[in-house]
Image 1 (spheres, one colour):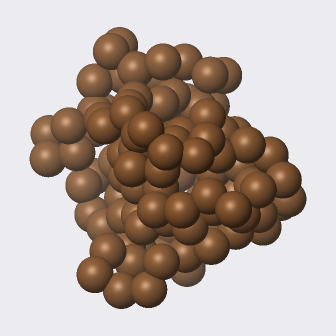
Image 2: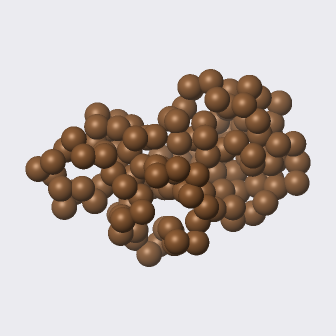
Length: 142
């Protein structure tokens, strides 16, 4: 088994978040999350009270990204916020879909299957067909 939970002899099989085994340190309980699609599950950790993130708006966030093994592959926490136009294809589809509806001050966990992530090619430290876990906090919506 590779870190993404798929058989390394079958690299063309997309991940399925519903059947993955997540490291306990991630705190993922897929059964308790809201299923947006077969490849996107969300859980609000803190519900924000500010401006709502809607398609077309620019969203500023802090985030940490993890493989299902619990290994962190990226984070900007403690650094500069990351800004992107929501729904504009500037980020992986799982973010464009998973951040919609969040409000400033909100924190959400996104579990993203490979079809809405980096797919069969992977990216840098992210292996092909990896399910990803992101903790995202919305700082500003414009």
